Length: 166
Image (cartoon, rainbow, N blue to C red; front, side, top):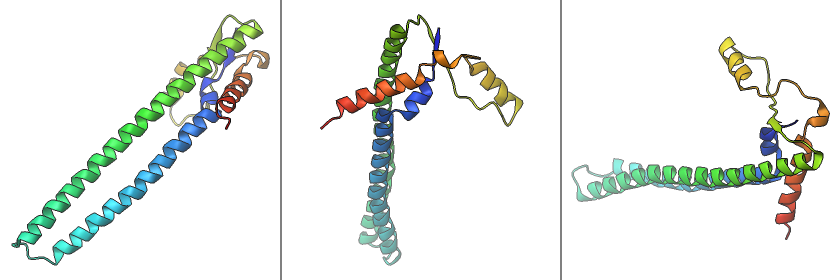
């Protein structure tokens, strides 16, 4: 029997760091676009203050303001959903690759079973939090020799590097 910290591998592998960087870049790009939308909304509000509320132009600008405000909210929801969907799909792909590599390493080293090892901080702010940590803990003890984490992480990173050579 062996152990492996899959969460640590997922957090530390180059493929996931790339997914995280892409997610952050898209978020920054959207924030820049949103800032422009917000500026247009601000400008329209300023224009409205200087118009006669009974004029046709006021009604047109007010309708434009409503449209831009609604579009901004909808655009934010669409961007967030798309980003989360992309991130989830890529994370699932990486997780599947990690599981495949865990199986390969375990077979190579002669292990029939690999259980999850977690890096859990025991100190807790409440008894309920501590009991949750205890309940989630799958591996209570292992010798360092049966821990596949580093070897799996190295192989996952190597696969990523090989698939991203230019």
